[in-house]
Image 1 (cartoon, one colour):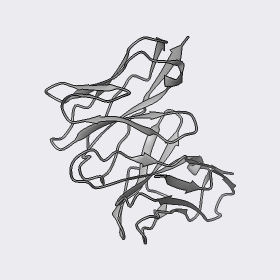
Image 2 (cartoon, one colour):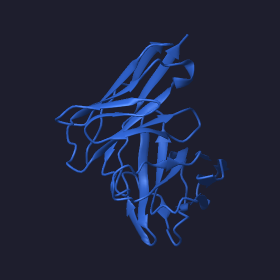
Image 3 (cartoon, rainbow over the protein chains, first blue to last red):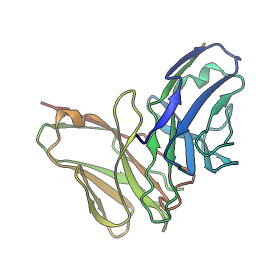
Length: 115
Length: 112
């Protein structure tokens, strides 16, 4: 089954303790992206990757890192989490077909709480 | 980058047609318009995508006027299960990779 898998689904941590949220897709997609969702603010892009070893900042990259060493994986790293990073996080991927119609496929989300 | 504006919320009754309009005044020539549906605690799900005029699939229709500065998602005969948040996204779909900007979405509530 084609899917984007995020882990963990729920995470509670303390300020300053480094954490990684994993994201994996099995659709051979070039493009992957991370978003955070907060009440009333919709989805905001954190980082995206056009392909292996190619990453770029979205609208809200501060406090986050990403890496794209393999095509299928795109982990989100919080080196020193703070309470304002408490949010619902989504990973997404899409293909580069060159013919239009490259919808994003989203994972089921990771709910992060930083105390 | 084209920002989008949608109504914050809409109410409807089962069996009615619902039209949700999205404004995107700064849409670029290469930009496609894509709509997503999101249920609580789930990731957004692709509904429909278009470039111009009208697109129809098994769940919705998308109407795009000639100037492409807005688009309307049409959901025929909604049911209670269509209660969700609907997002309009504008961007270059043919590259599959770029900076994506979602609006705040439209919360649709379908009543019995």
